[in-house]
Length: 83
Image 1 (cartoon, helix red, strand yellow):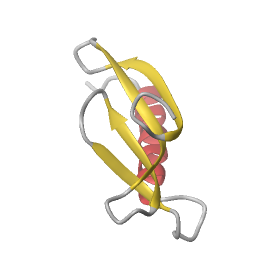
Image 2: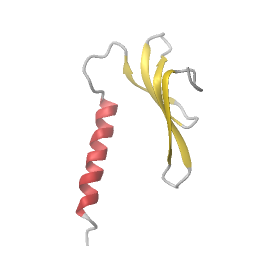
Image 3: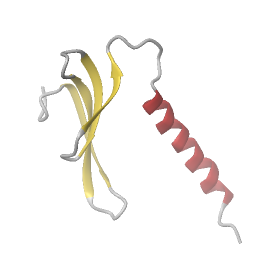
Image 4: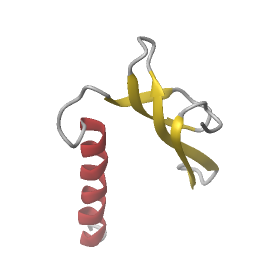
């Protein structure tokens, strides 16, 4: 277990929108009912569950939304500024 008490915890450091370093942690933990869940947390903020152990399918909405956002960024950034 890591610093949050999660299993298979992974933490990376990035920056927020004003340039301050912030840690982003993903890992496995338990929800209040004791179910194993995949979760994400930014800094010392709250934890968000993005997948329950019983979920079917390969992708979750949170993961799909994040991937879609990165695709939009790549598409829009390559267009250049509008006049």
